[in-house]
Length: 315
Image (cartoon, rainbow, N blue to C red; front, side):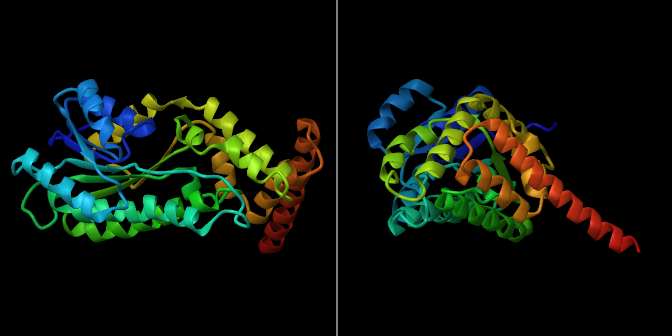
């Protein structure tokens, strides 16, 4: 493994969760860390907490002018040196059925995770080796399992993460001309505050009198359990540091527990996945055994269909 030569990094969305864990990890590894926060009141406390090698940047990723001001602070601090890594981590997550969520809420997801990433990449690219004769850096965009799998009640979130991954694919191929690497990191289940901030219980009350009541309760409980059983977010930060240290990293990393489940969901036919999801969410059965038997029946049925297709192909 090759060590990162340039010891500076800019991370967005650093108030809590993944961003905060990344600050701790990269400071431990000797980096100068720029971290974005939206609340100016947090600037002094975070500076005191993390020390002289942490430089807080106050901006909202959806606000281009605020980021442009932060650019000047970064430029002054770097004094002509380049930025080794940009990690686009800022994000939000609100659950709800498409039928009832507001267009403003949907738009906020897209603005935060897609437009926000676009803004930061475009503004900070010169520090990463675009247009300037400096050694090329890396862009790491934080996606999630929702970046490749659409899930019920997460249309806003999953749409944004899907779009982020598409943006990252295009960006990676464009920046080949500069030698700047673009990497997608898609964490699955890690313990962060993102679902606490999403106010799941309050949202459940909002949809209590709708047809989605039972299904939303089940899905929100699943999300809550997944978060509680997830790995420590500091483990994720350590893995991201190791990825950033590689000379030739992969273009996409999926990491975290539940690997087998996510692999199956990504490889099984979509119609089968729909049936599997429908049973525990909208079915009349609350007990795990009945749900398991029904899902097993659907999988065996699909397997028989695939086997018939294969036998015809052989003939």
